[in-house]
Length: 439
Image (cartoon, rainbow, N blue to C red; front, side, top):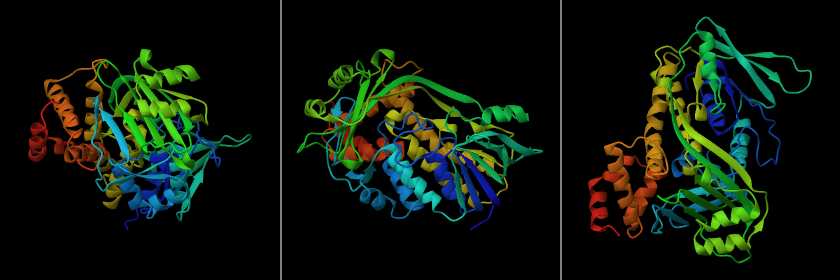
């Protein structure tokens, strides 16, 4: 273990902040996590995670990483009520209008609500020696000495609280896409990172359901958008024997409504017949929750020539993905692993080393997500010749995956971030896809 300093402070106790805290305890004697929300037991949603009431998933690679960071984590979740599912055998995926062939592939995931997952990670992090979690606190700004960040100013949201200075050898901004590091850089005389924005205008509506007794359905039913119908849905088995139904649409005209009748009408426009029948007969156990996601945002910190020592950025504060592909928590886990590797090399050049490592993890996921959206003519954006060719090829892969379990397995391993996208053009897979024909 290489000690990088005495104190580290993480701003934000969402998934990215908690995973950052987990790897920081290997390099710092004390880690303080500062969170604006009050983290009350049993609360299923909070202001700092506005998408928390919608379908979430740890992709297979995310499950692997959490198992590495927290031994026995998957078994703990399942024992507490989460649902373990075989990635392809227990799922019904419809992508590009094709129902992927179901088959056991030896890859499992754990299904649960966002707050359930986050609470278990938070409990694990809280139990680590040297970690303190301070909730109900606002971050007032950074403390600096010369070109180095030496701490943060915080103030409790409880009445009568005075501002405090938390000294730190390293501050990690995990405050989400609205994080203030760009503004802080401005104030300190550093350049802001270039921002890449991809506008998508997705609307989500979700509700917890309890299916009729004896209902038989896969543990997850997912339907992706297709040209001419930029809508999708996910019906996910989660903790406590419930199902979480999330409906999504691209463009204002396709945003799902929140009234009961409109919600069901939207579901009827996208759900398979058997799933729709169960949805109509299910008992609602929560109101319909709404969320709007206007655009992806990526901040290119790795391109900056100057950046203050003692400060890093992680999670949605670095790159924010549309929740429709379920990549956010897993990409945050990949960034935490990049941070772990970067810390192991010592404090010298940490920011440059980490931001470059994180960018390498983000790059393929960013291209894959935006490429999937640009396959829909309803989504505005530049389509390069190479991008159009890849979109056409992925369509052929999805069609072949409806008949060939080996193709379906490879497609899911790529989308689950277990394998790189290049595996979709591996010669062996190309032969299988071409031999399957067009239909």
